[in-house]
Length: 449
Image (tube, rainbow, N blue to C red; front, side, top):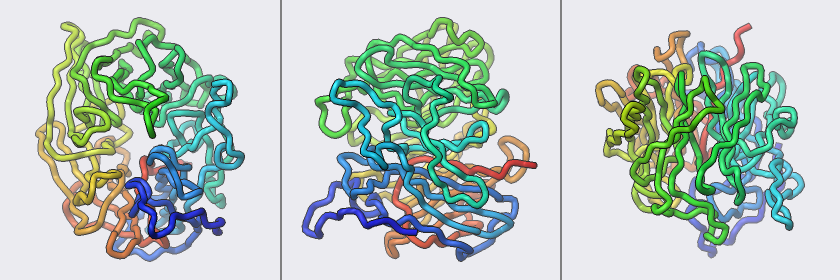
């Protein structure tokens, strides 16, 4: 299956960094079967590896974050790479040119690009972007990742939805929030039960409209990050600007009192796109791990930091754990909100950063040890997702990621053994076209019958 090729810039035109090299979009939607494999795919891996990212249909976008969403999916089954396919998410913006804000300044929450994440909850697979409603896509056997349509929780969701919801592994609840817009409420906390019904929507007072990309969940708390990246419609490109005068703080809300007080604790000005994990440490301490930038939009890279909240004293201890650049941090999702010994992160180029040797990092959060997998010259990984080998949370498993090879302008799916990620890949699946650099995804194993 192919689409009409988009309009492309002439060779003489200077492309912005987010439209050059492997940041550039692909023009075709493909379906390919029985893909060639080097090595052996673990037979335990039966399901979909899905990853979302921006792929502007018109081959033009003012910012990396704004391209139309495209999901790349690889089906693994019985030790075989059964199929690969990539599909644009057919949002109303994609199909009808719908705008997020109309001429009267009213928001259309069904309009968006759904380009940031893809998650599963209560049997639905959702493509997400933080500026609008989710869109459901079809992963049932025999289907092609088609877009089913907008999902607003039966009309109960009245705000946008973060691209980084958290599923509690104990209750099955989906916790998330919505932010954005020039008028209050600037932040709303939501909770859906294990069946997918939206059961809680609670506005939270914050001083102004900031860009809140991620948050934290523990067994007992929700923690919000109110950081100094402030909405500014006049700002070129992204309508946000760095404003350290706004201040930075963490807001702690008890899960058993979702309409109760949010306790705000100051931290040093910084920005965080992505949280690794969080957990309670007794009754009065909360431990958070984040990929922290010294500021938003600057030249400084992100590093792994630990924040320890002391509720008894109302203070936050802030500590940098590593001096290596890292982004897209992930844990075994069965330990979301629980103590997790290991976390994983990616080292790779970002738009305008120039070439950075691509690697995956495995952090031992107890000992501080770091193990690195280097992919070799010109080979760059994306976010690596953990796929479990058995039913023990925190036990053995694999890291799965798409890897781009600049020397051949092709991409592979690579599987690494988490028990020895520095070793050669367990399996490398060779794909029929390159996968542009993108954002987030998940390993979605087939439900156990």
